[in-house]
Length: 117
Image 1: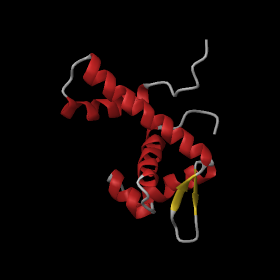
Image 2: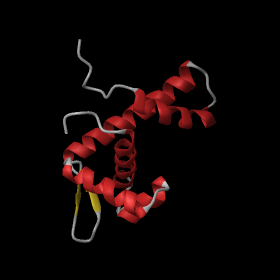
Image 3: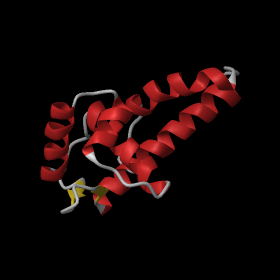
C-alpha cells in the first residue's frame, strides 16, 4: 500500500491494534460494534484491507493485522497519544476533553517516517 490510508481505514486499524494489544480476538461483528457501523460496510472495508495487505482473516473469521497493518496502526496510536499530550500539556485543555480532539488530529498529522525535506 503506497498511499496513506483513508480515515476510515485508519479507524479500523486502530481498533484492531487495540484489540490485538489487549489480547482480544477481532471479528467483523466486533468491528461493527466498536465502530458503530453496519456489517456490510465492515465486510467491504475488511475486503479492501485484505487486498491492501493490512490484515489477514483466518478460517475462524478472526481478523489479524499483518506486519504492515501493525506498523501503520502503531503509528496512528502514537500520533493520537502525541496529540493528547500536546493538547493537555501544551495548550492546557482539560484531560477529559482531549481524546475527542486528539482523535481528529491523529488523522491530520503526517505519519511518522514519511516526512521528507
